[in-house]
Image (tube, rainbow, N blue to C red):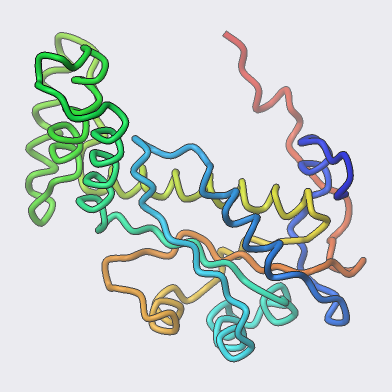
Length: 244
């Protein structure tokens, strides 16, 4: 898979592997490289509200295997990646984006900025605080009501409640997780995203803050033949494809 691997090769190769070969090691540096590639995934407003916890410690791997309910994909894994949503870091990420843009555009009087530059700066100075700012969920419903009323007259963004922003952050993290798994497939390495897990135990094991959320736990290794449960099944394309 490594030489001249195309995207379609990686997509076809990637399977959710349930059993890894315990006699075959994987290179942690290659896994780290795949995680770096995952950070290039598209994400909402470039906020990058994620963290990637690369697990190589046998002790922590054993604890996570228990937290993943003892499933074989966790028990036989050589390494794991825990993708964590950090919506609580929105202020820091906003500031980092703003600092980058100010450096990119250069220091100059306000009137010297182009309309595009002004929009980009105001996006992080005003729009992101409006979108992510909240007070026990109350502010989110006020914003939602404002958008609903505005929507009576023109198209408007409506996903402004606390629950909506949580979904936005998880979608971005999910895109990164998929990018990681395809990158691993391109290296001839296997993965399995495991939904079945005790997220609270995982957060305690990794000493994560209470406001963080587990997006996905991905086991890593090299497949055994029995680790693939038969041919890939998908619903007929005609049933899910709608052309307008």
